[in-house]
Amino acid sequence: MKKSSFWFALLQLFGALIWGLAFAFQSMGMETVGPFTFSAVRFAMAAVVVFAFSFVHDRFGNTGKNPKACSWKNAKLWRAGITIGILLSLASNLQQIGILKTDSVGKAGFITAMYIVIVPVLGLFLKRKPGINVWIGIVLAVCGLYFLTMSGSLTVTSGDIYLIGCAVVFALQILAIDVFAGEYDSVKLACIEFLTVTVTSAVFMFALEDVKMSSILAAGIPLLYAGVLSGGIAYTIQIICQSRIEPSVASILMSAEALFSVLGGFLILHQKLTSREMLGSILMFAAIMIVQIVPGRKRKQK
Image (tube, rainbow, N blue to C red):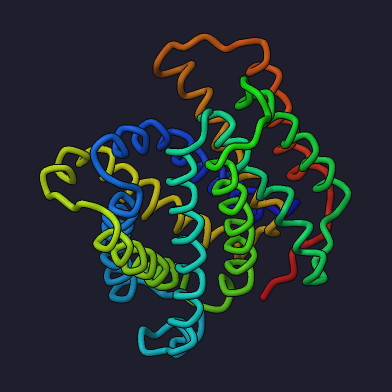
């Protein structure tokens, strides 16, 4: 594989690491605020951080793209960002509701990560056929995710329905980013995406939830991590990396958040790894390696 693609793959893995460590903070935050409040405040923070970076980048950096195409005044840029933002808003809020209603956090993570199967299947309809290495990686990743996250039954609950919908919408969001990421400034695109999530979540927040400033402040640290790191940084990394990485490969790299979540518990919280988790970690690592080392279909530059 090309050196540049390798570094973008490492960057996407770093984003997955941030997502993997974010689960504990999201769980803590949901103890004091509702799902729509959490999403609205989280992505408002993300939008502020990314807008600040975009302001600095515009003054001292160079987008490397057509200045008109990357201008804030470009209507197509806004349409692209709003489209991705609506999908992210729907997926994120379905996930938050699903976690509240499902009977197993591990099962919630497993169902959500099934976008790694949905992305290449939907990609076939868009004439984007992954190489055999990607399909092998998908099989290994699904098996790895199962051993990493599943410990209960496979009975379907109402929460699982939300999570299945979440996985489908996340797959659509990944494919939408693949369409737009190479056309516009990634930072501006991310900023508009986060603004869209903030506005759409805020509508349901005020309509359905009891919004109290004291509750939001109580969830301050979880919201800061989820907003600045998991939101502002990790989701921006996703947009940047998908301009260079095939969506099917990117979905496998992103699903490594489950691996990092387990390893984070082992390294930081000194939790013991079970034999199932060790096997799942090995399978996930093998999936990541096979899609990066074994030659596959080359990415077409936009």
